Image 1 (cartoon, rainbow over the protein chains, first blue to last red):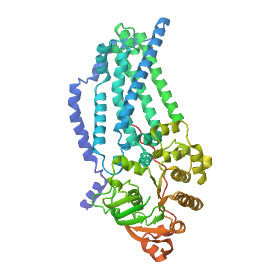
Image 2 (cartoon, rainbow over the protein chains, first blue to last red):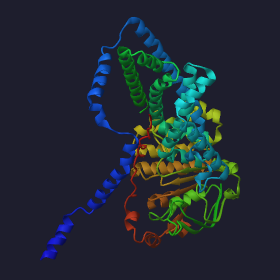
Image 3 (spheres, one colour):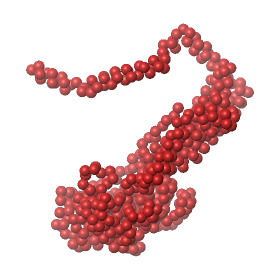
Image 4 (tube, each protein chain N blue to C red):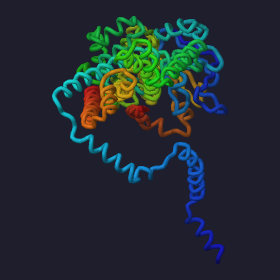
Length: 279
Length: 276
């Protein structure tokens, strides 16, 4: 009787429960040292002193500074930021497109039937390594290097964005092309087309919407990373934020942040519009 | 282009290591300009046979000769040039979304075009009359500038077949050209393929689910079962007993319509997005 009841109990119990409990506990044990190492003490935010500092800072940020002269400068620097992001992403696109083309496995003719040949395989590997190298150095570091080389100003920012984003665009373009449907491209290759022909007649129309949407998203990222680059003297809105922070002009910071929100929203609209047109 | 297969075995690259090869000891000789239909139950190796004949899949053993040449002994460049002289139409039409029918059909001519010409044709279609004529043969002239993802599955399949008419090929390998077509359309499409191939002296190798269509349109029939040639005879000698043996265990395929679903290509997976 008792044996019957216990086997019924067993059947009602979730067999995965013990395993989940164990892994949750293990995760806590593994994560705890990380919190210690990063001095993660959120309650300090609620101490009297911190609250006062927060209040002072937030109070200083209102109202936004809308003085005519300042707005004019904001407009000029916004234009410069947009130009910097656009030029950087355009350069990155020009460099990433051929690297993607070289590194994409879908366009391999030798891989159509069996294994890829040695030389193309090595070339693909080299292109991939170059992309890894380019994106593993943060744009901030590139910017610091280029500020030394070409001096303070947007040129350093453009070059920094171009180099890092070449790596990112190349990697993600490659992943988009390889994860998408490759039936059309392979059919063209099997019928004797060249790699570039198969790319333009099959792979590109197949993946155009994703590629464009990602490129516009990268442009948005470039606008945001230009803030960071501004701090090291690459110019644009970032440099203005840096200046305003140093001179404790809270209202100006608010205005600048609002401009950023507007720019990001704008890129969102552009991306949605492009996808609708191409969809 | 003459096709010769001698004791060809082939296995799919994705097959399990222990699985039996998809094709076993296939002997086949199709003269230049000859027409042949391959029939057999699902999984008999019809598609693999076409892929081997199209140099899309290297035989595991045995010899393949196309026009007297062994393609797998050629350099990669020469092999790709040879591929330009044949046309393999897969069962699912290889049409990327957003492309227009005119571009999709003209893509058949890519092997004969240089890179610059093919790019210019993307900007403005170079030979609209030829694309129109090819589509017109399949009763699709009104879809010339329609996007291929906005037409029906049957129309997509016929657009895929129209591409063959523009290919600079002397060998057509067509895999299940009728799987998405209703009986009337299927009859029309098959007779367009056969007649055009005859006019141009193109060698035609077609795999078909529809046994009646195969017997009505092709002088020679190859029955494939479990990767082996069960019979290779003139159409008049394909008897009821032969068919029953060929389709033993799969009688539904012999009598019913082709059990093939034409699914639109799946939407690409969402892109990986990473940013700081």
